[in-house]
Length: 330
Length: 276
Image 1 (tube, rainbow over the protein chains, first blue to last red):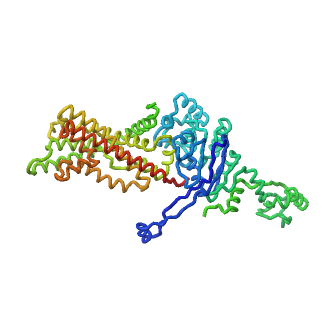
Image 2: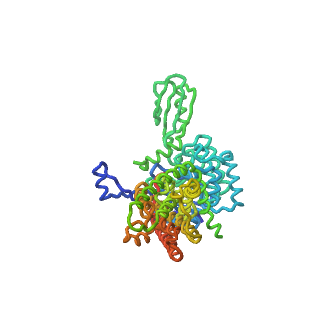
């Protein structure tokens, strides 16, 4: 039985429209016009225990709304959802006791308190018995390497340090389901790698189900087997990046350093992207021709010094996907 | 069982209380301001009493004591929204409040109680000490805070002040919840500020208001913040009357808690957190 079942989940926000200018503001005092925004339109999916799923989508696609509903802090307009047998927004208190949540752009630690005091407060708020809290906290503290930070007030921490403490804070009560909303936002390369390792191990070794919403495609590439792509409030795609790459082959690129300047690269199915002296960047459609055919043609006609084949990055792949589905925010 | 149940609330109370005690400079500044205000109000009242005709409902000595008590316990008045909660609403960090496996109303009530009582404790102790012991010592008896007439009055007063902490925190929590609707807390603060100062009897003792208003003023909820406990202090309300006064405070507290809970449930149902 899946851990999470989501059925026809919809959310419509009603926002007051402001009319521009002074007269508009005056009229707004008496009559308001409301605009409805459909943030989610009948979303369906299931998730098994121990899965690590990535949720991606352009800004305003409905990712955060979905996560907030699954967390139990927002009520949907229609549809239903069950997580471990509970409807999150009906049994909020029991539900939130079992999940961990990290919003990368916010902190759940008390700004003026030393980190360890925040941890102890959370221990009491989640009613974790000391006998269970101590080993869990010690393990998290050493895994996330935050021993040195425990006695500093949160406001003195760097973003990377704060994020490590925030992740620890979300796991203190040993939840079986972890929501991460942009956990690597603004982090440096090392912090990102360390965090990804931690998340991967948490999922693999402890069997924690992880829902990761992010704009960082490297997070997705490194962590998520399964990816939900959300756009305009719908799930546009549910599957792996590898499958998507196979389906959306798009163009491949070749960067070639010729041994002398060449006037033109005339090969069928190839377009020239850029030229810089002896370096030429070309693109070809793998459905029309193969890298082997293109390279054979070129080596037959010209001398070649260096050659590199480039696949489109996940970033490009996803951007193309968004555009082709009209999912880019207006 | 009970301890486990109460643990989150006790914990947030303690944490907030200890955090508030760090604001010692603010408390010191507050004390200075309150001495200043207390002195001005006493001078104004003395002038009234010197030029007034007929019998006043309370003596000048009582009025002076009333003013000092008011200044000492000024921090208990629910005159504004908790700035921490107002900030949370603006930034959206209130999302984390809803992610705690606790009853959000009780959580906020515990937080309000810690905030109000810690702010008061820091000011009340030095102010009470100076206006009693030090004023006597320096021969300012005429300006000093007089003890209550009996031990019974003192005990009932303490009980009534405990009720004030609950009443004030229940009103504060109601104000905090209302910020969900208004987003900015400034409007609420301006309105409640003047209402609370006047209707509690902080600016002018309620017995000094015109006769026909007295019953109404006594029964309205804000009298329970200043007027009722101080009347008990002077034994103007004693025995059964004092108990009735405390019962009135408790009734209003229950009313505000019920109202707050209803509003919280209603609010959270249609509550929206924007942004990532």
